[in-house]
Amino acid sequence: NILSAVNVQHDCASSSCGEFVSVNIQQERTETTKTKTSLVHKYASHFVLNAHSLHNYALISQVIPQPLRMAMSLPFLPNSREVRLKAARTVR
Image (cartoon, rainbow, N blue to C red; front, side, top):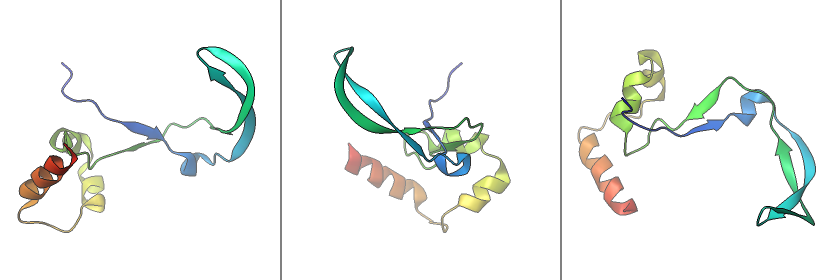
């Protein structure tokens, strides 16, 4: 069963990505003569996970090893549930 979806991003910093190339822009599935600069990504086995996502924080935190959870913890808030609910209301 799927419990949650997570968003992971390629980690350019630890992968040492830095090469740029010029690529043709596509418009409606057709390649145009216009170009844009694009970053060439290197292979990576590590990704960045948004562990502070409001909509599924409880599920995400269950799969992160305890030492990592402690390392990324914010100062303790006695009303953290209230703070997260208030933040969720502001983005709706």
